[in-house]
Amino acid sequence: MLAKLIITFGALLYGLGVPLLEINQTHVFNPQWEPHMRLHEVWQLATNSALALLALWLAWARNNIRLPSILAMLVTGGFLFAYLMREGYGGSMVLSDGSEKLLFGLNLGAFAFGAVFLLSVLTLLLPSSERAAVAQR
Image 1: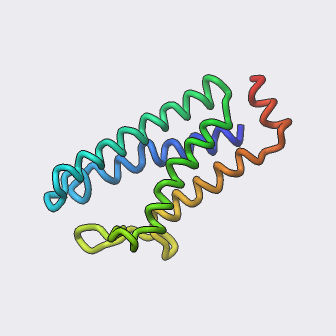
Image 2 (image 1 turned 30 degrees about the vertical axis):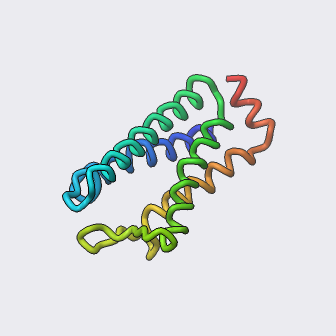
């Protein structure tokens, strides 16, 4: 059950939380963004939301823990990679108004997605007896 709750937390974060934070004037409707940039943003949000729905279905309807955990690691790991490489391609987490969302002095996205990534790794490291019990339900 712990693994399913971790999967659900991650899926809600990258599948619902991020779109709620980015469908606004700082991202999707940002007048400073080129239309092509907006298209890529909406594509990324739609893809991540679809992957979140798949992860939830796999975990709760199919009792599959491994694949949803890997999906969460791919989505959050992709963000962490982009965040760590941002200086190399001119990226930034500073919003167009000059602000940056921080939590405990760390960028909110890096903090939250780092936590989801690590929790997803944890679900893969659960004892095989617990994974087997989940799969039998």
